[in-house]
Structure formats: C-alpha cells, structure tokens
Length: 261
Image 1: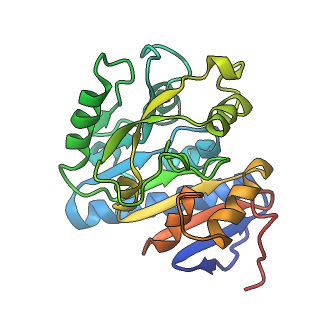
Image 2: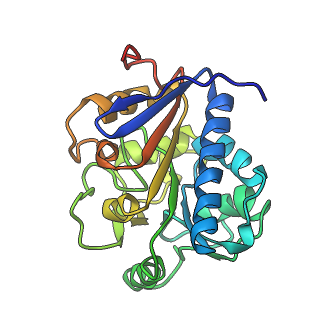
C-alpha cells in the first residue's frame, strides 16, 4: 500500500502523526507496533504486549497481525480492561474482541484474559496485576475514549499516581454512551456500570505506546489531550509525558488541532 509519510508533530514529548483516513492511520500504527515487537524480541528473545479492545483499533491490529517477521510465539499478550458481570461467552466482552482481532489470527506464547465474571473482582485485580508485573511491558496498543479516558480510567476515577496496577472502576455515563455509539450494546441500560481496568501508571510504564484514534467523535478528546492541561480531567493528556509514545490520527480526529508546527 502506498501511503503518505507526514512528518510527526510534537506536543510536549508526544509525537503525533496525522493521516488521510483510518486505513492509512492503521497502516502506520500497525507497522510501528510490529517494529517495536520485532526489536524487543531481537534484544531479549521475548516481548510483552498490552492491547486495547475497541473498534478504533481494528485497522491497527489488522496490520499488526499480518506484519512480516513478528514472532508471535515469543509474545505474551494482555488486554487492558473488562466489564464486570458479563459471562465469558458474551460477545461484548473484550476477550471476545481479542479472540476475533488477535487470537483468531496469530498464536502468541500466552494470552492472559481478565476474568470479568469472577466472583471476587478485587481478587481478580490482584491476580492480573501479578501477571503484569512479572516483567516489563514492551508495548501498549491503545486508543483514547470520547471522554479522554485511557483503558477505563474515566476522568472521575483516573489517578496518575495510582498505587494499584489494576483496579475496579465505576464507568461514567459518557464512557457508557460511547459503548452504545460503537455498536457494542443496544442501549445505555445494557452497558455494565463497573469494570476492571489497568491503571494509568501501568499503561505509562510500558517502554513504547502506539495510540490509534480515528474518527470525528474523538476530535474533541484529541484536542483536550494535546492542548489542555496534563490533568485527570482528560486522562489521555498524560501521554504527553511519555518518552516514547506516538498518537496516530486520521483527518477527522485531528480536525480540531493545528498541524502548523
């Protein structure tokens, strides 16, 4: 695929790469993610990856799972959040998303799913945190929510200094409405009110972040991420402090920011 290669913009430490549409965006983000994983395996023999579960990631993951030279049998995969209370067979679980978009296409060394149906969610957070902290994370492939959340760290619950690696969170209404907008649930009442989420420090601890954010519905969150204060009012603003993070946008999601830099 021929694609443009725009020079990245910089907002504090965060690189921003704008592309004509979400297909080009996904191509660039997926190839960048593949490069990080290949490099990690070349250096240490293994890699550890955290993956978001949302329609915004479809194009990026399609490219990543087809990329040449990625030795998936050496990669351990985590995901970043899961609804509490949905049975593991429910099609709206994020494990279902991972099965379709990652595990149905590649065979990693291991995939660790968050058990949202666990009878003791706090114990599940402890179990998952132990798996995450066994070794450093090489890469997070992530998005930004319409309310600026990263994972399920909505503004009311986000904590940039969180002492926990994984926690139970209450989902705010804007977050739950996004799940309806994304076509994951028929209406707001069907969206769970609680979830298990990796915290902001856990996501930020990764060596590299590849953040894919397409679509006009994300434009306001992108503007707040890049031009507002670094504060939990827009949790994604913390990305501007990461030493190796790139935000991939299409023209629609970038429509409210200036590209004259």
